[in-house]
Image (cartoon, rainbow, N blue to C red; front, side):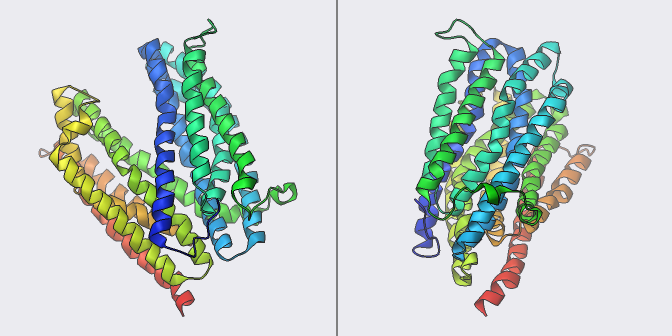
Length: 449
């Protein structure tokens, strides 16, 4: 149910919300893996095709940050200020903007989706599998936008349990339909890779409808109103001003990962495999900290809207402390037994050695990463995500460019690439803290006065 995050224990709000958000993140990660598991039974061309087309999932998820971050920030501030009219307007405008983006996504996928798959596909069979999957999954991808809008409004109101339940049921529906539609269980009519796409689309449709139906029952501030959904450029502009930099930051992460793959390509496939496994493990390690950071956004937003500068600052302190504590534990574990995390994914000695070295070096920056996540969420709560994007963009200068230069040097090695990445992460953390300090002075100073 809806929570007043301007009252009560900040630590309690953070931990309660983070627990549900963490579960939601886990099931969101499982969403794509379910399809890949059953498709793997169809052969290498099917796996490659779905993996290639599946990159569209992560691209669209990045674009949904325009809605998810923009709506959460604006609505949380309005709720904190007890401005029901403002919260209602922002909610309905976020919905109309999400519908526009959903339509644009469908058009883009219809016009360019097949061509994009062909660019990365290794052969004709891979291209055909990728196109079939993407065509069936396109409606589900488009529905991610309205789902993100409703989810963001609920998170702004402190409601995270209901969306997590819906997400869980959606994944279960996807997992149930996948073998039926892909392999033809019970029906005798296998659809192959197209069945994987349709399973995801049906599950996404259920999730979107369920969120819309639950919305008026789990919070009491906002209501759907067709008149308020009529596009207003000023409202759309405000949502985009907060959400667009967050989406750009999300996409920038994929650029950095792409640079790593390019830099280490000549070392051998074991290097890319080891990095890929290590990166996936690290993403899993970050889930609890990301959940805390996602919870900090609405807490900070409501208190900023309520003009309570002290609670906004306290939100950052508590969230940073929790994140750092979690990361210290994970750092110690990675240095103790990284093989326990890696062996379920590979038994190839060379790939395992690369992954272990990567995790050991990267783990020294786990605390810094936790601080960066927390700062990013605080910028969202304050309604200005440009500083977070600026801090992330420093990695193009402190990591991407030097890493490319490093490939031509006699002292190039994977270990040095990992060390460079660690140094870049530290610079980003320092930059984030300095920018957040400036935001606190400019936005919280007048409130305190």
